Length: 212
Image (tube, rainbow, N blue to C red; front, side, top):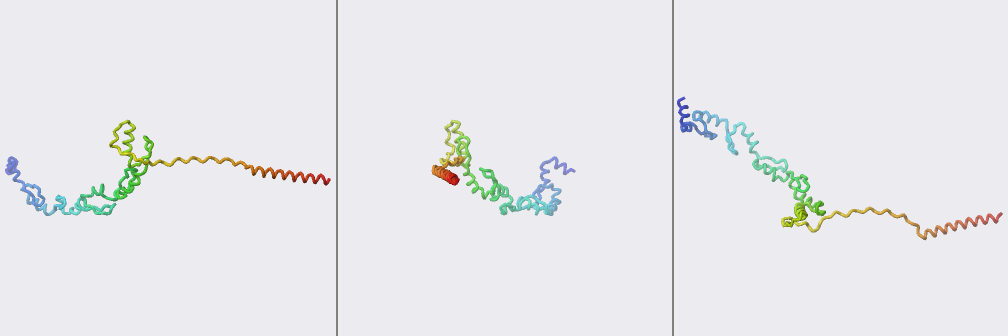
């Protein structure tokens, strides 16, 4: 009691009453240092990766959860855990990313080829009524809208390509066919045939009259 009272009244004495554990480097009251050192050396182990004191029976679990390399399920590579977040978000070639033109998601390794094709598609600009490539849309929109607002500051805008992709002209419906008229030659043949039939009928009637 007298020693405790002396330690409370004298800060220097309180500091002198603390000892450092050689195993875990923690400050332990000198009165408990022997017991703590035996317990610490028997039950705790210092992690070589992070320096934390881990119960010996949990060291494998601690390593698997905190330090073991990770097998990427997308690209099948083995990645160090400290690099996992960067790999997953920025470097994995099989991570899913969205096309900036159509927002379709595809593996990052295929993105460049896809955007080369997708960026060449065209859309109609409602301001100037021209068809603009998607890869040039932002620059065109800045220039087109700046010009439409009467501002002369177009130095920062990207130029619109001279060749514009226009849609094919609409196909006009075919006119209905006019009814064919009989040619003069056909009318002549028809007249001859009728005349011949009339002559034959008259000849037959004339022969019948003579027979009577």
